[in-house]
Picture 1 (tube, helix red, strand yellow):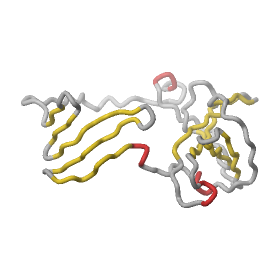
Picture 2 (cartoon, rainbow, N blue to C red):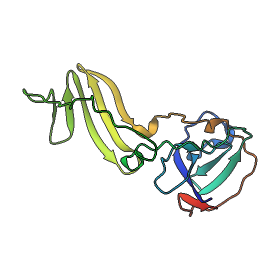
Picture 3 (cartoon, helix red, strand yellow):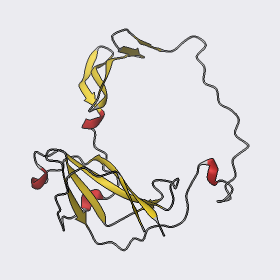
Amino acid sequence: MNFLIVFTVSGAGFYGDEHEKGKRIMKTLCFTRMEKYDHGYSHPLEGICFVVNLNDLTVEIEEYETDIPIPHVKRNYSPRYYKEQNITVRKDVKPIEIIQPEGPSWTISKDWEVEWIGWKFRVSFTQREGLVLHNIHYRGKSVVYRAAIEEMVVPYGFVFICINVSVSNIMLKMPTSYCFS
């Protein structure tokens, strides 16, 4: 049986671990796909994660013991799978339409300053960080000077419990998925 292994890489955050100090770390969650269009998150692969050090472009393989099997039940929700998985589409939901007959309650100036119900801030985008909000004020009071998505940490999955069992310095020149048989 062929299946695809998919790696989802996300910022790991920093929780004070001495061996991660001064490093820009990304960690992976691993999933399998039983076929090309299989739902990407339906079949988690537990027991292994990869720690990518963006400073020196190395990858550490972290393994932990688990007895959680890979789920094999299909969970595909795109229309191509409806018939195969006996999925019926709801017919009792009426269309929704959102309108603002008096116009929006917000304004955006030419220099990307947004004003909305007492809030005032500037918006920018950077290649590394994505969306960045600047000089956030609420009713004239400064709330945040600068906020970027990359400064937020959401510890998805259980990658934070990985223990370093084996380390291999694989240069980061690999594709994001491999096919195994």
